[in-house]
Length: 199
Image 1 (cartoon, rainbow, N blue to C red):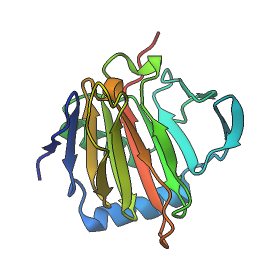
Image 2: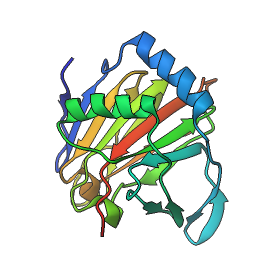
Image 3: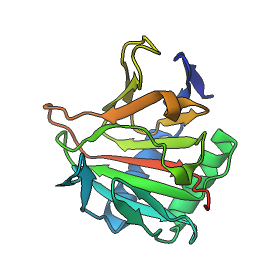
């Protein structure tokens, strides 16, 4: 199924809910959940150090060093599975990626707060390709400046095997988040492929 544009002003967001078949998505979730060297470490939010409410891992080319919220990430090498998935994503997105950030949401209490992927290492108009595996979680978008972009927050339920593409000026004008949920929720693994630009 081709990528379908989500109608948002000052953004370029596309979604393919069936990028991976159910069997392939389930196999990837099982393999990556058990084989990746997951990290659980603190980040700085508003000057305070707090533990991230999820597990993370960073893989990529040797030069793809990346920092966010006070964390400096040195990439782990590509595994064969991650390399193969990268090639599939690059074909769909028609662009090159040299790194991937993996986030493992163990329960509905694991989350991602409001933010934009606008770190200097990603360039001025980054392309972020996000693959979801496992439980369906709600992905929310809201304008950075409600007065400049009077648009209500948008919610997308990202199911297993889906591919979400954010590009163009999306990170300049929009924030996104994965909120907590009180509902019993199985694990969800999200992989966001990126191109880190050497400064």
